[in-house]
View 1 (cartoon, one colour):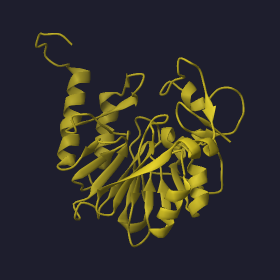
View 2 (cartoon, helix red, strand yellow):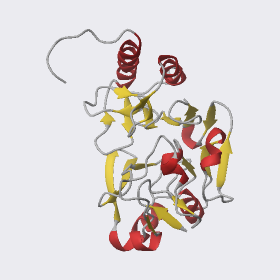
View 3 (cartoon, helix red, strand yellow):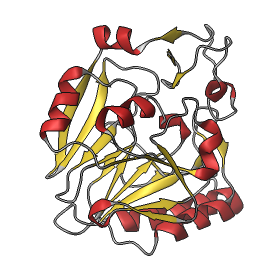
Length: 272
């Protein structure tokens, strides 16, 4: 199996192109498609662990590789859940996760973070939950894959996967009610993208190629998460966390996005 160095997804060694990078939501780098392997990554990279909150760790490849997303290990007495995934599974992290109780489930937001989900699922004998609407993007079929249908999926510890759509047809988020002292947290991948001001999120079909979503689609995404209570939201990238009042931030962001894509912002002069 080879790994695309642009998107970080493990896939069979067939042809010279990566179907994920060829899609309009991603891109082929100027220098062309390049490949590596898990064995090579284990020699050049490691997983950096960061404690984000009590019972919550983020995992990120260092140095930077491919898209650079972080995964989250969510601890719970009923079973630990890995939210999203990274391409690397190093020996130290595998042993550390096993010591913490292993994984009861792996939940994935959308195809750009499929990375090495089959390897992770096999390593921990854990089902990998991806929405059936995006099953066509599974490039490494395996018995651990569990495509799910519908709008929600219950996971251990009262956690819930919620299909929002938008970025991909099956793009999902994860609601975790027990975090933040019981005030709840939402893990959004980039179905909703926490932006650098850490006070808003945004919504796109393609982030690198700047393809927006319609106002109606954004309203549907926000409506999907509205019934759930959460105070924090954890985005796909390091530092992209809204630590408090996150639900209000999503409502503000919806209003701002819809205004910008329908009536537009008033011109205030200046450059930019």
